[in-house]
Length: 450
Image (tube, rainbow, N blue to C red; front, side, top):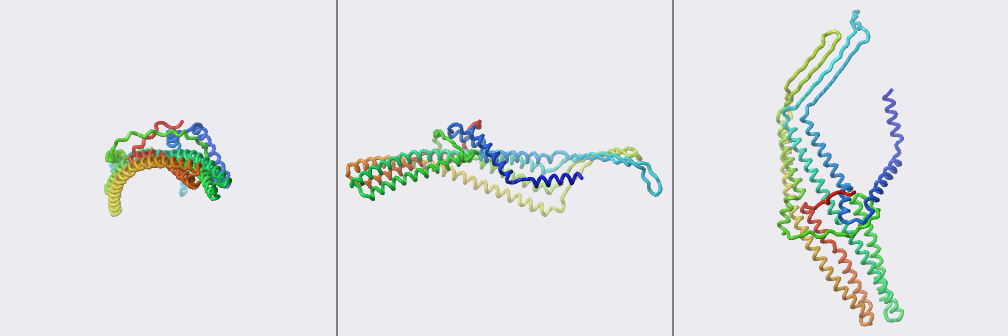
């Protein structure tokens, strides 16, 4: 009867589940959580350090890495349980209310009660030692991986932060260009009305004005998207209102040669540290596969207590040694042992390839810093030249020395050069952050967000 009631309650619970309402409740609860975080953390303008602290505390990759580290620790504890004794306790009692009749003979009531305790303690289980050793290395790998995930997240947040600053500066530049294009159009339109400029030159000035308006609108939409990317990296809703202070980090002191950078990367990179531990894990797995050929010994102790209404009380205990040897699994054990050795060799090859990959990434990132610095200097010089040219052409156009189209083309060149300056301003800072990650030395900000 109880079983039927339980099943009925369970089935009624399944029938009462409203998927649409459950989805609505979960969405509402999640929105409230995000709103609370947004109100607390986005109340003031954020600099790069603030963004990094929020991301390292609240972002989903960082929190998932912490969960993987916890799971690795639980796996180690599970492996350690193989060394603990296995204890089994049982008890039973039987009571006959009426005498027993058999073959016309009547026997008295029989009462039975008993208890037993069995303890099995592993004595020689070599595979358990190597399994536990491998799980300990897995914990270290998970800890290093969680740190490296946060380093990678720092680079992503840095890129997103500077991308937002680029878009903000670009919007300011495009607004100034739009105002200048409107002023030029008004002047050309006046000249056209006086017959001093051709109609196509007015149309060209109008096209340039509309182009600046379109570029400004695109930049504003791109800023919304860039801020959304930054907010998602911080674990916040992409439609939240965030204000950036624009504060940047000073460039770190240089002076290290490329060879010194490579050597430092090979000694400190987290991926190489994880690869080293993976090789150790494979070594333990090879030893564990070899131990499958060996017998496993364990000691046991068992005790029992029996109380019978007919017989005397019985107390028995036994102490002994037991061994297990899988004789007919030899072929499978040989195959497993060979596979473990192949896996160890494969892991070693992966580490060697990773060694070369880290070297290449450092070389590429170091070259990226130089490329970014050169590109910004070149962009500044080009903008300076086109700005002087545009001012000169504008003055000559007013005096009627050159046609309007030449001045419009000079303004377009100046505007394009200004956009290039804005786009390359923070490339060196991003390249330096990329180099830090390639070397595995990205510094995490101290403390979390309040």
